[in-house]
Length: 410
Image (cartoon, rainbow, N blue to C red; front, side, top):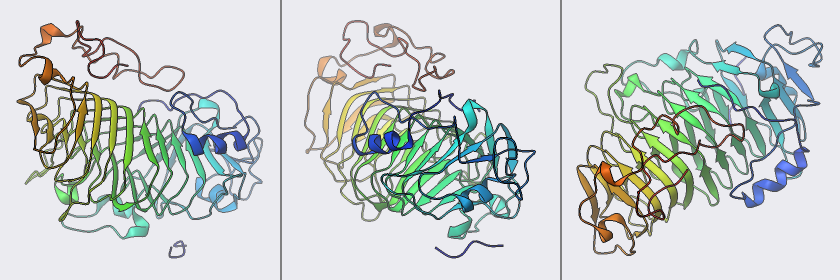
């Protein structure tokens, strides 16, 4: 890496287990256990009234996140007090690795709302047709491994978080909103990362008229063991989730994508795609066997789920596609296994090719599904505030009345 140039409230977390415990969780990503992060006795503290000449204690905090990042080493915990941290000339650049046994933690302090605002960064306002140099991508730009980043809100940046060649990181309880490119992008040679309980919304790219700003993109790279769990990806200009040109399997669980692909910013020559889950793509598209389980895609401008030309062996189970403007499940160019999926109110329920397998989907049970077959169609609960554990709130949203094992359940 070149040398550095001279909404929604963050989820509250109780105080903390040892950093070593969080490190151990990364290896297994248990389905019901969120990593813990210690803020009770942080190594370095940042506050809006701090001073970068101070030692970085609770009593004498630092002023900038970058200063704390530059000082931190394996095992250290950076705690950011509540307030808005406006970036001006430079983004926050993370280039130092933690270790498997001693990751570096960057977290909001004790559930306080800490906002990183990149609106004043020059790259945030790249003109139409312009490109963003790699080291300027992201209000937080990371090319490092073994970090735990938790509870921050990242807004108005040239990307929210941009992580390239990143391994074995945990990103939890983050909000990435209103950025000028994708809210969160992971790319390059990146393996073993967990993206947990992400809220990413309102991201757009005026420089490309809506062509590429997604809620969450894991794209243009490869690497095994990347997991997305508990994300909500909504009202982004392009897609909710995008796996364009990513050549390795990604696991997506317990995630919702909605309202993507509409021109809410009056961009000229609008080119947003509007898929809830775009599961590949490229020319040629690599064959990647992504697994998508217990997810909902609703109210998007195009497809609920699309293979986008990915010829791989996709596995889609317990997915719900509702009220999308095009196809609920557009998987005619892949070799998918489809089981216990629900498609209601889409322009076309499903489009599969000769390589499709599976059974027990709504279109296998009946050719006609309507709102009357569902317990509820009001998304207010699942799109509302998260509970204390950081997950997606439970409700009867889009659950079938007579087929409880069909589609997603939250």
